[in-house]
Image (cartoon, rainbow, N blue to C red; front, side, top):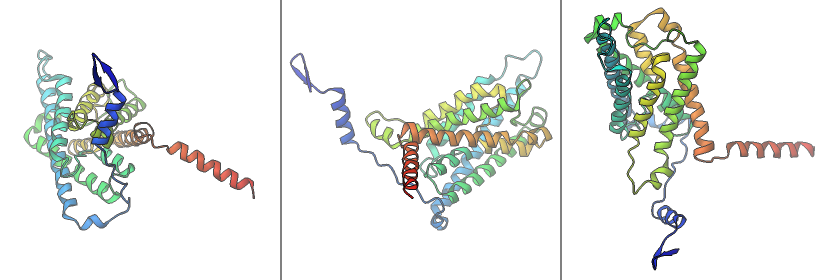
Length: 298
């Protein structure tokens, strides 16, 4: 405690201690990865419906924006028309933000197989829930792209169907790196924005997790659209590939699963080691040291 102009004031550390004491956080225990008890619960299937619907809406809005932009700017004298890359990126980011906010209370607002995979690795959801979420997300994305194709059939077929492909001038390795790092940024933001410690610390400054997640999607699209059209969501990539159904799209489709899943796994590792200070490496080294010492006495 210090004084200023004769008035007692609390130091920053004391204020932090007071806030932590007043707003403790609760970190849920890790779920059992092979737990199947929830398969009999209606809440799981409500969540699946929520993920299906959210994925359908996300892909419908975003792919419509992509096709609409390409159609409006396809004329030689109309290069400046349409929403541009900025509008396409904003379409994805803003829609994700709205949908995460709307569905988080039902399903957690994953809306992305890479996010579900990351949360499974982090012990937040069971394997059964993660797999069912991915199935629901992919089906929702396929239906969403189907609606776009039904409404915009000629532009859809002639302008690439919003499918993710490696742009001319970029290598497969560049595309894979862009998808990996882009998904890392997204999943890193998801964990940072939803971390229980942050929730407790920011209790007096309300923070909507959906906003930074949507902004992460927005900025990643700005960086990655010129390279791959930006996947970072395997369901979105699968939906467009299924309805566009061209050989080149399918030949490169693996990039938009391997990249996002790799980026998601790296983000989980970073979250545990850096953000949450879970000494996985330290514990592994201590265990290895104990094993070595016990082996030397035999």
